[in-house]
Image 1 (spheres, helix red, strand yellow):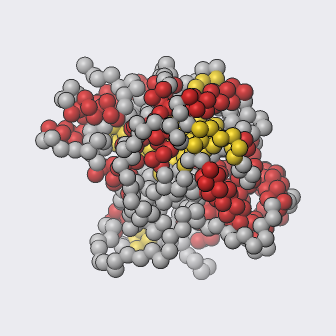
Image 2: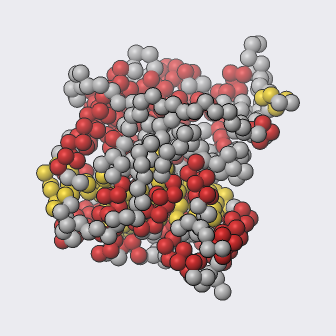
Image 3: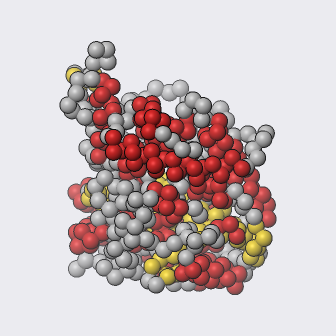
Length: 487
Length: 95
């Protein structure tokens, strides 16, 4: 009989493996069967790598039998389909890369493999990670496991839906403006965007290079720390990767909250925020106070309302440069019916990219073009400096900041697709964090009419440990993260 | 900032992005709308504020100049839309 994988954590799975109660092959089979049974309702996965997963599981079983292995050995995982996997298609959910098979692994993927992970498949995303609902996938939208008529958030919506639905035990996502945290909030899972530069970006398909960061999507904070331990740290293949030492992130998780200072910035409780979201967030903050933290409501982050403009200038500018490489020459889609180089490039990009990607390439091209550079790009970079200074000043007074992850619950599929600006607004609480480069987690903090609500906890640069400590204390005292969707 | 159709066409040319007439119309409205929203930034006084290109800056990132294997040529060329021997085959640049 297959083991029960619903709600299974890495820690529990690893414990069962160590005691020989279950084998990695059995766990992997159970996940593959769950994918077959449930994923047709969700469309969370773009590619399932059953054969590879089973051979990785067999290898893990040998390692475990010999008493070896890491805390991830033999535990099945899912990878967002914008991270290169050697020999396995990496599509970015774009027609442009539909048939692209990378000849190398992204560093984060390589580190999972070195740690004995079993990789079940690749998760759907908004094309090139541009979007907040996973509706921008060129293949199909992903559905939210808590309500199939609603979006899972984005852009890592395939990864968060997969973890919420127990298709795999954990997943890797990437976050440029909220793409791990917003869908984690929408799917009631634990998603962390570490400090910029903590995890190597080598092999992560580039979107906004000064903003992009890979991070873990898990069922709880302890699991998140285990995955961070595996993927964080210097990599000489990424010149922006930080040489800062990486602690064991499971250390100090149980230290409690006494004496810890928590700031609540009023600017994040934005106009238009749903009352059903505000209540569980306020309750969660009160809970942190009960657990011993000092809550400081006198924190001003006045640049918050400008984050949307700063982000949607900087990210598309970087994207317009990064996506110039897709021109149908070295890899990817190539428009077949022309002999002209320039027409070939134009038609390749016309037919290979979807509407949101085109919109962002155009926004970025415009912001960087002659005569507009100072008014848009330079101005946005200056406000970026002011944003970072505000966070630094806030962290003089408090250890972490706590906010909602998103002002709304998951919206209906199709509800916001016609209005790009409305779609961008679902990331207002997560964008400033990428602009400043600081770490932040989203954890489940309750439900509004059965739909998940996320709490965002933001930390000082390289102080992921304190963010995890606060998030862990909250999960120890609450049960929101244990609830499972019925599928 | 209101964009004209001509502005949008100019941008698509800079970005080498083929578009249909209908797309030009749609993008003109949508991009104007987004850019108008960005006007808010002009209210902020940024006199003397240095720009931030990267939030966690590193200085003088160097690495050992060590020889190592490159990726296998065949695996790289396997992804190429056009290949001739060990080269990428491209369309004529000069016509």
